[in-house]
Structures are given as C-alpha cells and as structure tokens.
Image (cartoon, rainbow, N blue to C red; front, side, top):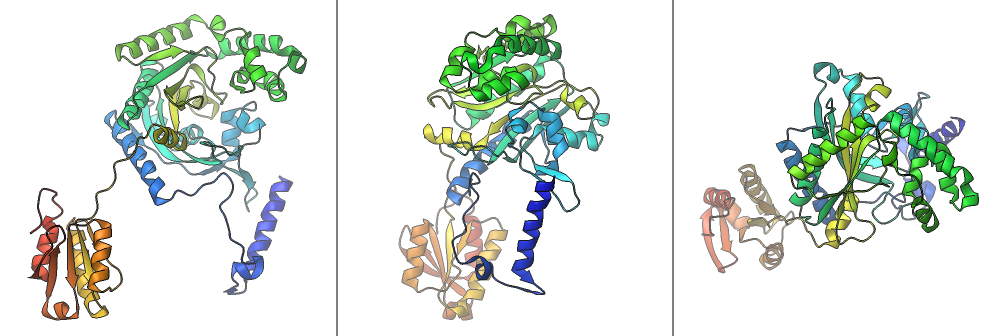
Amino acid sequence: MAQGKAVLQRQISLAGALCEGATCEPVSAIMGKQTIQSIRGMEDVLPDEAVYFQFLEAAARRVFGRAQYREIRTPLLEPTELFARSAGDSSDIVVSKQMYTFVDPGERSNTLRPEGTAGVIRALIEHGVFKESAQQKLYYTGPMFRYEKPQKGRLRQFNQIGIEVFGVAHAAADAEIIVLCVEFLREVGFRDVCVKLNNLGDREDRQAYNNRLREVLAGGASDGWCPQCVERARLNPMRVFDCKEQRCRALVAGLPAVGDFIGEPARAHFATLRSLLEACEVPYEIAPDLVRGLDYYSRTVFEIVQGGLGAQNAVVGGGRYDYLVEELGGPPTPGVGMSIGVERLILAMKALDLRPPGEPPPAAMVLALDDAAMPSAFRLASAARVSGAPVALDLQPRSPKAGLKAANRLGVRVAVIIGADEAARGVAQWKDLSEGTQTEVRVEEALERLKALSDPSVTCR
C-alpha cells in the first residue's frame, strides 16, 4: 500500500512539474525531445491490423447473436478484491504478481482487469440481474491486462472475446459453449479444429486430488521439479501440469490422474457433454493433463486447438465454474464460459493465410481544383455520403493531373471534378476512369449519379 502511494505521489509531482499555473509547458521542455515509445507488452493496432480485430468481433456478434447471447460491457478497472477473490490466492495471476494494481487518490486499491468473467459476475450481482432471471447468456469483447513476460502472441495488454452462461447446471450449457466456439472458428475460416476435454470433478473431488498430488510432490526440488513447480505444489498442485520445463513434463507423466478421483455426479455430467458433442459431430479428445490457470473451474475444462500451428495451437479455452458466483457474494448459480485470445487468433489466421475480406474502394472521388471550388465539392461529397454512397473527397485542392493520379491510386470508378468556373456555374465534370470519357453535368445530377453508384449493380454513365 505504501509503495502504491509513493508511485502515485511521483505521478502527481510530475504532473505538477509539467503544468505550472494556467500555462502548461511542453513535455519536451522538461523531459527532452527523445522519442516516446509505447509501454513494453502494450502494442499499437495500426489500420492494417485493425481490420482483423473488426472482422473477428463482427463474426463473434453474428455467431453468438444467433444463439441469443447478449453483449455486456464492464469497466477496465475494478476493485482489487474482486480478482483476488475470484482468481484465488494460488493462481498464477496472484502468486506471480501479474495484476496491474495501484492505489487511487481515494486510498482505494484498483486493478486493471486480468480476465473478464469476474467483472461480468460482479455486474450481474450489483445490478440484481440474477433476481430477474437466473439464466443469463452473455458475451463480451475488450482488453485485459497481465504483467507477464511479453512474447509472440502474449502481451501485457491483450484482447479477449468471451461468452458466459449462468444458471444452467445441465451439461447442455457446456456443450453449447463449445459448439458455438467451433462455429465461430469455422465462420472465420478455421477448418482443422479439435476440442480437448478434461473433467476436474466437483469441489470435493478436486480437493481430494490436490491432497494426493501434494503427497506425491512432497519431494519437490529433490525430485527434479523446477522452483516454480515446487511453489505450485504447495499452493495449487494441479498447476504443475501447465509447466513447460522439459524435466517437469517428464515427471508429470508419472503423476496420478484426476479421473481416478472424480465422483459419480461429475462423471455423469461429463458423459452427457460428450454425447451432445458427438450428436453435433464436434471432434474432441480427452486430455487428462488439461487444467485451467484460474482456481475457480470445476467439472468441465476445455481447449480448442487448430492443426498446423505447432506447439502454440490452442486458440480457445474455457470451462465450468459452479461456485464462483456464490464466492463473489451472489446466489448459488452455476456457470460456464470461454475466452478467445484475439491476438493469438490473429497470429493463427496469418499462419494459415486466412485474411479478412478487404473493404471495397469508394465508387467515386470528388476533386476540387482550387479554394473557390472547395465549398461546392465539400457539399457534394457530404450529401452523397449522407445518402449512403461511398465517396472519397480530396481534402486539398489539386491540379487535374495530380487529382486524377490520386483517384487512380485509390481505385475509384469515377472522378467528379469541380473548379472555380464549374462552381460558379453549378456544374461538375463527370469523368469515367474506366472508359476515359468526360461529360459536364449539373451538380444536382452529379449527386443523383453518386447516389446510384452506392448500388454495385449500377454501371458508370
């Protein structure tokens, strides 16, 4: 807490140094003129990359909307207690200090959300949504934050697409989540997908299994486990299955299987889930060493992998969490959900040469040859856009040669040229760039022609 206050005080001091009285000095006057770069692990999304995000988010809204899921948006910043309680003291988020946490001027500890589920549950409890209906089907998109070592496909600010179902204990909810994920992946072009499934059992089953693992892992470092796994064995022994160290991977193969500790209710739930996936012809395989990074999962956990991507082939992950709503102060409410790492999915798309469909070029470009013509050209382009026509406007006067070169570079079908003489007479030059013809038309007629060009079946006249 004291450290957070010290950081906050330094930030306030810097802000005070940058602005004195009513006059703000340029940052460069105080900090020099060195180039400012983005924070490590937090990347800019430039326009060529943004089209991937737009494409995936639009596909998610289509697929999830068809199944009657509704969008929910929660704040980026939440009380730290929310994630400390939901993730659990033994999760990597807490143990490895992956949360971006700070103390605000009101002495409150706040955290940038490291995952989406806890905030969704907090919102539903706070606004009494569970009192209206226990069953809720929701989806969300947006950035999350974790202080991890940046690497390819894993950033400190990353984006997720997630879906959640609350109030349904039946395995049909698990199956619907998984089927929707597969539908979403196929919608954006993935074909060779497979679901990896595991059953963690109920709370009592998991506790019994963890106790057995602690006994087996008691040797710790002396048995060859890495330091991180030694710590995991103490706090949450199932997390040793996530270790990527080669020596630990070899030791994992000799550990007891969670399946040996699963009670009958969880077994029956898992059997029903498998039968529903088989009914929908969803390919799956049982993965006994699959666990999730957060402590709140029970019964079903799953990943969806895409063939042809090598070791980093998991593009979706999720599972069931029947106790989390109650642990966060809500009524006993079963839940199941998943999240998709958007940046990792984009990397997978690029590896498989899957590209979003490009936006078609505008049908026409309006060119002003001089300042006197700019009001007329500006008014014409604006009126055409209001009608729905995709029209580009050159925002600075150009010579005819330079203007037509810009129009050709943009790939438009028509250039509408207005100079001072045309503006004075209320006319425009209509130039068909494919045929090389040019005619003079009234501005009103040019507007009607531009409106018609919004229909792709209409040819140039």
